[in-house]
Length: 245
Image (cartoon, rainbow, N blue to C red; front, side):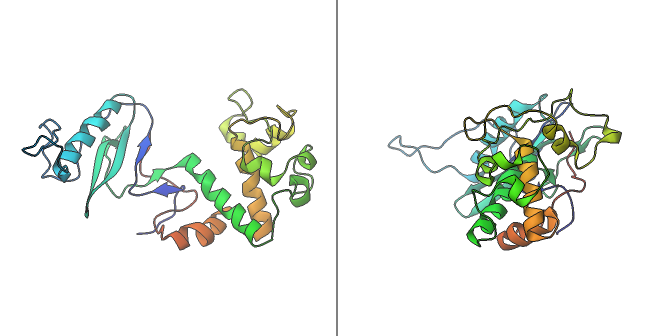
């Protein structure tokens, strides 16, 4: 069932990192939680294909490694034609609500390849070029914009300064422009294209590029170009996730 929210995945391998200990949980009440993971063997001693229950027990033991360091986890397991969703831990630590299979997770940086997908679609449609600069598309956004290309941004090679905790103002004074304003007031950390460093701000800028070229909010561009065609009916940009850490 589609609803608005941060870019979220309802049923996928995901972790929600946060405070509080996790508790064991499983979505299939028929699963045996206490039995050790085993792999059946044939009379000749060769490994046989595991059953879903055996895979479920093994995954449950794997998830329990995160007990105490992660709020919880959700895994989609597939054995042949059978699938099962396994959950562990809490969706809301304060309310002690356990994670459910249809809960919505904030997938955060997995947004980046989805933004990149839209950018490359625009390149394929000749509405944008990899060697266009930020200044070409968004005049005046960054003082260094004439040196930074779309290619640099996509590949984390733009050299823009990513905001640190020390850079950020109090939350009440934070706006959608804060991260870009901080980058604009810092020198480049390296010449564009000369090195690489994982960059959140680079994809913040790419989001603005998408909005300028498509003439619609990023949420709409993602829905139209990624979520809809991919059948991701329970994914959206922004909003409130069910799982909080």
